[in-house]
Image (cartoon, rainbow, N blue to C red; front, top):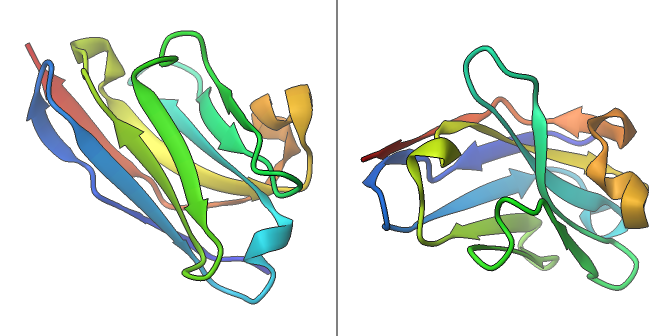
Length: 125
């Protein structure tokens, strides 16, 4: 069982930055692929970024490439999402998730077993 707790959300102006954190419980954090997803009102939960447990390979949605960076600290059981040059369309609840798949399968929310409660990110124009 893995419990995930996100933090770092908030209100920021367009062009600004935020760093989200997701702290995980348990001693097997390093064996999980960690992902970030987001859900805007009236929309489905969408993939944002993931980092593989195998070799720290990273994957990004096209809409955030070059602006967002995912990283992990296995010693701290924490995954991060650095978000730069934020846009109003980045406004959503951001969720972190843990799963076992890597590669293209890491981009599907169906392949994640554990989810955090979410943190709100609001970008004003």
